[in-house]
Length: 461
Image (tube, rainbow, N blue to C red):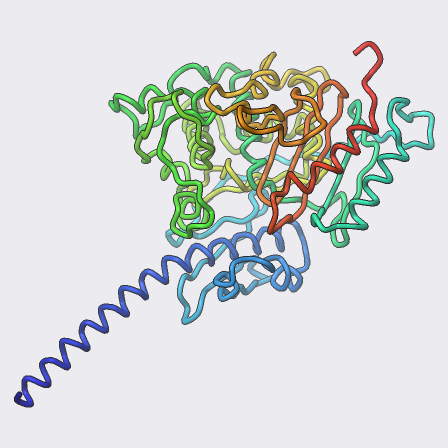
């Protein structure tokens, strides 16, 4: 074998090795990019929106997660109000930017589209019903609720961050973990889906949407299946659209949509139909972001400011001045996952449903909307309504909160975020936390049951 042949073989091997390194480098970059996007986004919102200590966030907020994620490092620029994250060798770089009124957004595709200035919302004070005053509610066992909340935080294996109990539209007790208080905005995760449904309900009340009509998604024009998908199908998660809601897979649809792509709703709109509308139930964050984007397009086609609509039609009337609905880089609300609100504002949103969509005598949601969101989607095995979870027994499963009646429905989010609505007791329970390594509802259900048992039903109910 000549020297020339040896040299040629060496070059071929070197080229193959380089190609292999490039292939795995690109693949690693794509995988790490999801983790970097996640950490940059969450750190940005927790530091600049929730106003929590940056050093504590960067040190503790991501503890107990996948070891690969621990290789992604985050830096916060307190002056620019930005966070940047990247893996080893600079792989998977991501940047999140804070903007007043909108919270943080990932700068996917290198830019964030500008958004208008939002109208101010003046927070309203909650009425309180303490045990030691003439305003006490007779059917509330204050001592039992105090014991339940004290015990929950003293033995905080569930990692509660807040617990709040409201009865008859009044706070009867609330408790916070160290580092949190009544002014702390808490991340919704998928409780945001219920607020997306609420905004659509507000649009229905104003005659802007008919949920029984096909959703006007531009990408579906002329499609024999998708063009027939209604707002109602989307609200019940029965659109039949293909989507992968697998958080354990870094390249799943949901992870790419939330932490890599610039337009979450457009990504969902381009998914093909796997089933005919109404034939199959599948929980999909893509569906919620598609709803949010389609609401935006519908409002803007009518000359209505989409961002101001959320304030004027919902947040301002109920006095939820400490609530922020975050957007993606395209400017659409991330209606599946990213809303920050104080425990008291989360309680307001639940209270609106207890009051059948009426606040201070003003109807904000259609009559019967509360019943609509709490009615089971036919293919969901009684577990899901219209972007709300239900506490009903299924075919081969028991209700999620044992001991509470089937009338109960609730907002629910990752790591145990809950707004639980109990109509027969005119009661709302808010729980926020960071329950990892366990099914959150199983750890939260016992204290919810204690609180429920401590409140009697109204006379004449």
